Image 1 (spheres, helix red, strand yellow):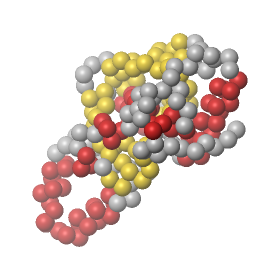
Image 2: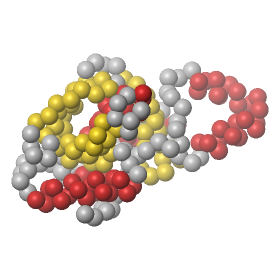
Image 3: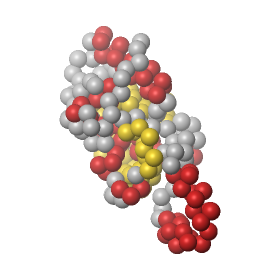
Image 4: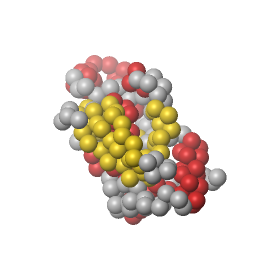
Length: 202
Ligand code: NI
């Protein structure tokens, strides 16, 4: 087991299309997946894609913590060669962070309900349905396999924030009194949930 280096936005490895995995008997594949798990846990993330650790293969790991969106936990899942299909056109916006885009967070639209298929570590085909945060994580991680980082999906780049800056801004708003009320009301009109400072990266 080893903790791997994580590539950051701007590195070419994050920009290309990763390759399908075809040989599931390769012992190195299983060692690598173990290293991905250790790396993700060490980094405090809930999702990690192989190109984020400089390996251009279509491999993703993720889990969903219990109580997220009020839903059930999804245990650590290894997805190889994943394919996503939206169930409807419905989309929702929420905050995302990424281990390859450290210190930042932004509001990203994602399909709210998806079906996805993938191969597990043995190469067997699996199918699942997902909604809410589960669906969001799967879309975020699968995007990594096609060279897409979440800022490229953002509609309102003005929401891109340092994770530790936003709380400070809110305090300033309170101190400033009435002058910022209009801005605050405007923000409250959107459906975007309030950002949680402890949001894990994907
Ligand atoms: Ni990410």
